[in-house]
Length: 302
Length: 320
Image 1: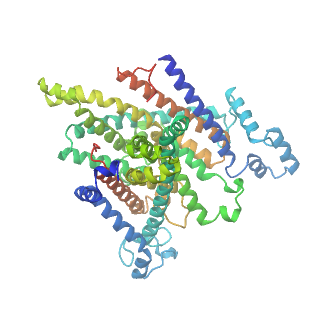
Image 2: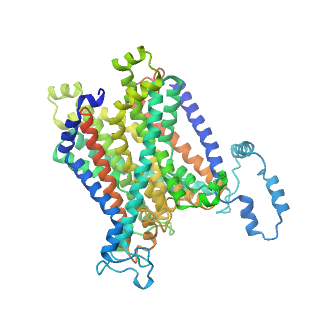
Image 3: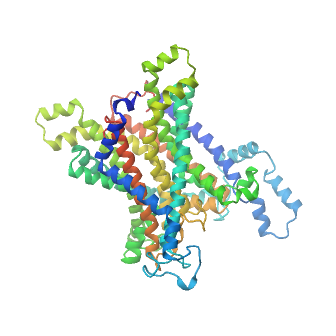
């Protein structure tokens, strides 16, 4: 291995990461959060309740007595809804980050390796996307009628489609960081002896990118993706909060807060829990990403 | 200088033109149709009437033709009427721009002052206790959902303490009333931006403190304050100003969230309501204006970069 990773063998990366207390803490919190969210059915069983069951005689219960965090405006258990919302938010966040990493890597490698007009075009587009007021444009994208694009009504209105759609929309905003970092690393890798040797031996661009560049781009891609997951989860929660992302009754941390604002005088704590969950998750991803960056690239300042 | 300005202005115009077509196309894909909306309020209209109306408004033409019609009308100063407000589009946008300018301006000044201050303190002494504390604050700032900050502020200052209004706009016309209504939105938007500014400044100061001129400044006997403020800060501010200018778009997105939560009548809420309420004319112009203001902010940032760094010569430079 050469490039960034060559300076730091895997074992030393782990040691450096272990030295980075905030990153370790972030990773641990994420692990626990994910386990907790995906054990929602277990919690439901243990408490002996059904989180989808509406019970208007049991609204706004205070914490305790079978409902550790109380009940919401139609009598559903707040804790279980929160954990189920976490499943959706984490899944959407991670899949969107994955899609964003794919787009970003493709754009970054092409711009960095081929250079010339392709590079200026792709980088101008990237700069443009970074500079735009993205949220209003994403709101338009989230609100457009898929049937007008020729997608049949039963598919356009389905639950799956709304998930794919939010993943797609959020990844549009998330790929730029990866693209810039990948382009920068590709530019420096291109000058190195092993790439030039491959070129002189007659290797084509496809072979060089897949066999020589991508393995060496792995660590910067991992860092950039980890750092962008936080933003992606934030963006999903904003769109869902505004009523344009995950549609109720499917819960997500963002849409759990939509009603909370109207109910803020009656049930103030409903506005606290989902936001706290987003905050803790996003800060954990950011700390983990920061630690990974330090561990993989000792020259960086942060 | 002027050649550079002309080139940047030209690029901004291209982006604006591309965006205007994109926005127009996307708005055409929104649920609902202007004529269907008219039909729903006029039960007497027949399908033939609808077809005639479509022809009258040019809605039966292909997309590019419709776009060019709209663009030429807009450029001749006629963006049409807002459906939601029942007023000409410009009359609706004017006050909203002013309100958002107040909100963004105040939040930017606050966030920049706090962010640069914290970043300087942290960057001057990396890996000190103070640096760690400030870093945690900065990480919290970039990780907190902006609409949740707004909700928490309402919870504390409006619900629990009852000191400030939970939203809306000042109606009594007094300065005190206006400030009371601005306080929470400004605070929410400040929290949303301050973390990023702190991190930019900290990184730039750490980078500057490694330079030779810092060693020289220390060697000639300047104290720590003089070194950091007089030498490191001046140089560190160059990249920070550029990053802040690039962030104008983010600031605007933050304003959309803040304004929606606080029901503050600015551009962000106007755009959101226009998109959700099928107000095509208003949404198109407002989105385009938001894009324009962001691009102008970026250009200003580049000019600030030149003003701050005498080494940068625009005529031969490649932009950033």
